[in-house]
Length: 130
Image 1 (cartoon, rainbow, N blue to C red):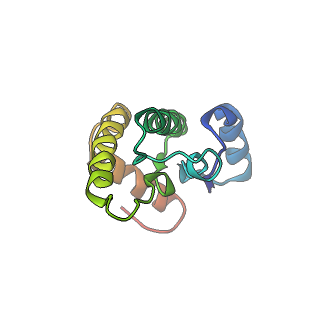
Image 2 (cartoon, one colour):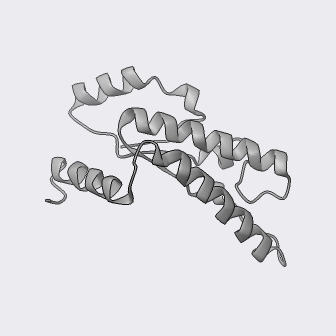
Image 3 (tube, rainbow, N blue to C red):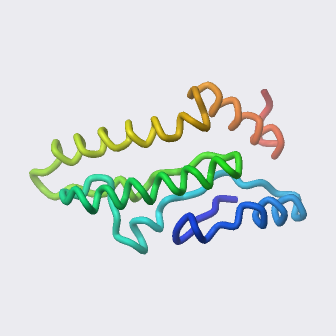
């Protein structure tokens, strides 16, 4: 399952682990979409303070996802640019994705480790083998 919380504080890691173990299922990822859908935050917002709130939201989701042993998914929080704002928006997105990647690296020191973990999850669910 993918968890789509309104914010990171809504997830009780111990309870999620207990419930998924009891049900015999696993968590695949934790989504950040509520940052956009509920809080209207994006990583490309022209306002620096709003971007900082978006980054902090994603960081907290990354932290919770790591505690669950899974990845965070950044989708709609990337945002949509206005006409004529593509290049500045992509610049802001690139900057903050690099920053968030550095934050996530403390949990997955290499992309290879994250891929290996994904293969392990797939193997455990019967969707693939290592």
